[in-house]
Amino acid sequence: MELFNTIWPLALMFVLFYFLLIRPQQKRQKAVAEMQANLAKGDKVVTVGGIHAIVDSMDEDKVVLKTGDGTRLTFDRQAIRDVNK
Image (cartoon, rainbow, N blue to C red; front, side, top):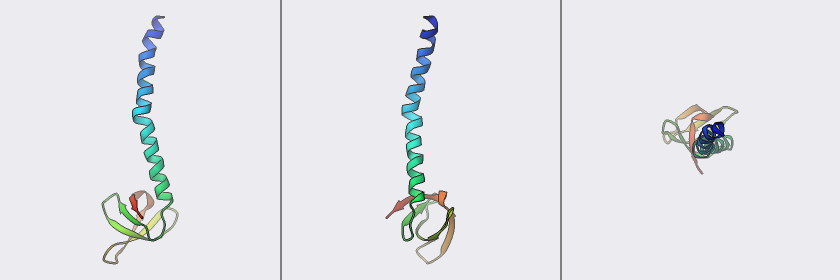
């Protein structure tokens, strides 16, 4: 019985950490990965560095972005933070 009284607070803490920290982070990671996989030419995006641009072309792991002045910049897909369609 003493062993049970020692273990149940640890199990309760693990369950709380899972639902408050681990699970929400996994959902965010899944949503970001899905957004990056569904990029399409013409999407308005924001990079991790804060650059606002339009997707000009892309391949499996790189995206070419066209900025407001016509400059073309190449980024990794992981550098895309947000898509504004």
